Image (cartoon, rainbow, N blue to C red; front, side):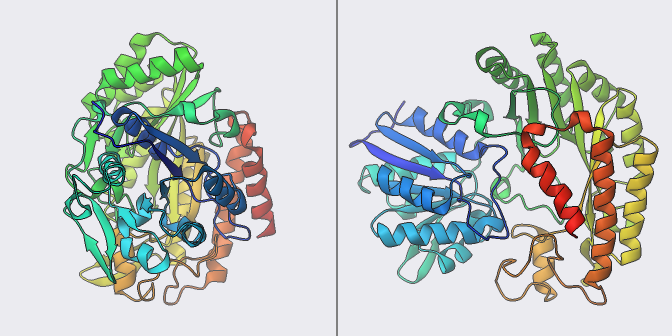
Length: 482
């Protein structure tokens, strides 16, 4: 049932815009699924609520113009750490024009570091963690002018009070993910989004099948869904299949990413999801997803192949077992090889994630990979490719983001100065300076890996999604410039 309302209200939900000459650009390949979920959830709770989504491909000037013309009662913006500066610039311009307009921030960075948000912007409130229920209560608060509930009574927020930052009680996570309405895809034009770099079919869409992850890898920043327990929540297989059926029949979708941190954490559940999808009988619908290597089985691989899951992503991270143990990945190099062999029996493409210069602690002491360690990782990836066990790879420096244990390790050992974010980091460079590690040497190793990436892409050129040609060509130019 809708909440009690006093009158009509207009809200903007926004991604940060494109800032000219900024080192970091927002994702313009796929929409912000979190915002689409918020819109559908709010629709289900309010009758007299107008909403507008300002997407990431707007310029700052266009973004501010849209806000000015729409004249909202509330402005909400969601952003990760690497787009925090773009968000702050946008917030401050809007607040200077409309001083009484409530500005609410959400997403990974406001969850991980709300005090940074308040120190660098004129935002009023940060939503900490999952946003659906919290934003619903905030909208009701402003709609009812605080008659029924005060800010301090709303769980899961931080807000300004004089010169202080006030934190309210933690908000419990939504237990039943099936109770959340499907995302509001109708508010966007998917033709504007080229989709990911590799696709087997088009149109493409993402289906979020779970929220969170039970593991605690030190590099992973997933603060939104780790603000409370349980760290992993699963949708029911039938509810997932129902969403897929809707998109296939109503919207003509022909490829779906089963979006999650790892699809096979609970093997019984993942196989049942595949079985429910198979019962739909869509032979021309394709899938891709992400797996953990230590939980790949013959039964899972066959179930994935039976639903046309043509590609999976796996986290390899390093070719050094000591590193994998140090970063708390909880896998072995042998498990990587075994998982790839099983998946390849069913002709599934494999994209392997690998990182350079992993950092961790042992008995309180700072540890990190040497150039020789990084070369071992590159050689391990090269061997997997040569033996046709993986098809693609990612390759770049590990980045310490707020919310990740790695970030706290870097701060503790003085690798990140003060309380600042990665303001001085230039995209493609080393995010932190490590003792006795020369950036020039690391950039040479990085370039070797990037040429290997490019070779993988040309080897499977038919898999490339040329709707995303700007990104593909941009990567080629970047490699040769370096």
